Amino acid sequence: MADVGTGEMAASAAGEPTGFREVTFRSNDGLKLFARDYGDPLAPNMPVVCLPGLTRTSRDFHDLAMHLATDRERPRRVLALDYRGRGRSDDDRNVDNYNPLTEMNDVVDGMSALGIPRAVIIGTSRGGIIAMIMGVARPAMLAGLVLNDIGPMIEARGLARIKTYVGRMPAPDTWDDAVMLLRRLHGAQFTALAHHDWEAWARLTWRDEGGVPKGDYDPALATTLDGIEFDKPVPNLWNEFRALPPGLPLLVIRGENSDLLTPATVEAMAEARPGMTSLVVEGEGHAPLLRGPLLARIGEFVATIDKSG
Image (cartoon, rainbow, N blue to C red):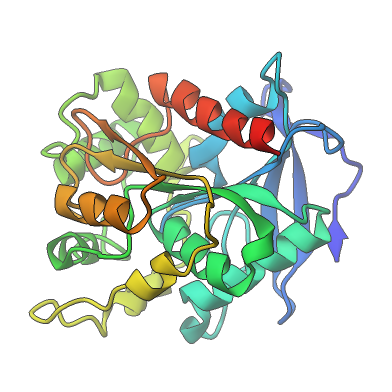
């Protein structure tokens, strides 16, 4: 059941409107899950649902959600979710529930509770995996799909790198420390970022608690990577990818320096789905930040789905 409160726009600490409503709903097993709800719920254009990466939150989609929700010609509703154990959603005492299938069911519950029967799904990394599973389990709910630096084949070296820091990063004492930590972890892949970009990314990665950066996901998520044997082929989702609804509009975004999604995999995806569109974000890795010119490219893709009905 949705718990929308008063339906008022959330406000910043300074009292400025943030442009979204704070909403919650209950999962089938009773957890209270959080989402940001942008735009007019009655907007006539196709809604968008945004799904973040493994340890990420709805904050990652703020710029994109505002861009889509406030478009003068095609405004639309945008929902960005925090999975269980991330952001402002409840942690799960059973770490086995931190898996894409359970999280996919949470997404379905949230869309149903909040009155979104069908939407364009934008999935970053883990969110794209959830979206591909959703395309098989609930195909009627997908009007289109954007995969941000994720595909049916996931590179083991990329997963191994992620395992080195998920649940293992030292806690930064200040926001300057947070920026330095991010640059140490991701600087080799994100060569195009300026200092203000790193500062903005830090604010997306940690929550602000009294002026101090704090972790924003359940550290138990690290255990979900324990069973992966990096010296063996990583299980793939080719069957799920090929089973996506015929004709489903599909945009694949790849970071130029990504170690999780290779050019060869993108090429194979295009062969499997000839109508697929793809683009490369120069100077960025896994996963490209949703900002700048990328906002317009995604907006154009989503608009084509409105026009096609």
